[in-house]
Length: 120
Image (cartoon, rainbow, N blue to C red; front, side, top):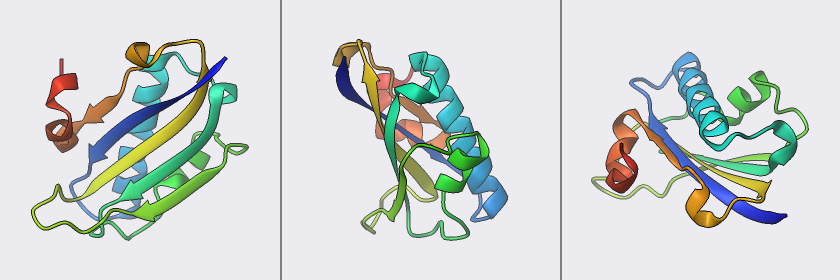
């Protein structure tokens, strides 16, 4: 079995705990569904958030959906002038038989501008 990575991102409308958790859960669930993942497939998860999102850690949302035995890490995005605001990004390392081209990366809401090549 190979180790692969799944990328994703979502934007939220406001810097509140509830919206950050809701958006992060929406992103994680969509990644799970599009890649047919189960918790035991997931090795680790790295979350980043733009510096305008500081009401909570996005990783809390992963715990809320039952990812209790998966190593999680949160960090800030580099504050680049003109970059997308209120954005949560995720990098999920997985065990899978899928090739890199079979992995479905997920970009939702305003984050679709980051990967227009993936928007269907």
